[in-house]
Length: 129
Image 1 (cartoon, rainbow, N blue to C red):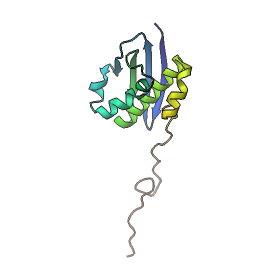
Image 2 (cartoon, one colour):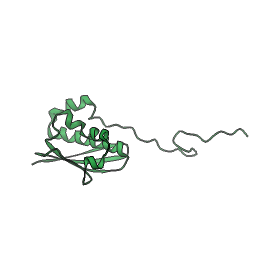
Image 3 (cartoon, helix red, strand yellow):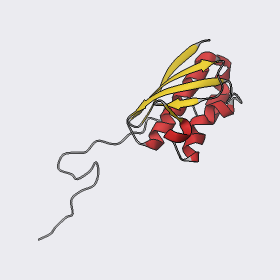
Image 4 (cartoon, rainbow, N blue to C red):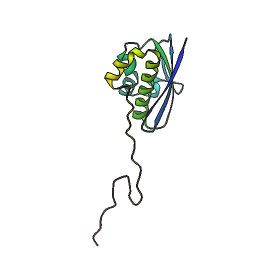
């Protein structure tokens, strides 16, 4: 039994993934089941996308350490980490995952707040008098 690890990031979320082959398709996030951690079926679908693209959802066990960010960023960080781990296991699967857009790390993040402004680009209301 081989365990492959990978890391995925999205916005402020960081996911460390440990994928073990000869598994039963169980996904555990922070010692909780996937359906318990992400109650939304859309976020569960996002996490499972790389596995279902390769038609191997019941082939691997996935253990995830996840912190930072919100639930959407966390789910996409897990997706990237699982994708990277699957590519480590089988490099021939990269073209199929790349075609779906799972290999690319989304660089978008929150812009920093500027001094003298309420937010990054918002300005205080102008007052003529």
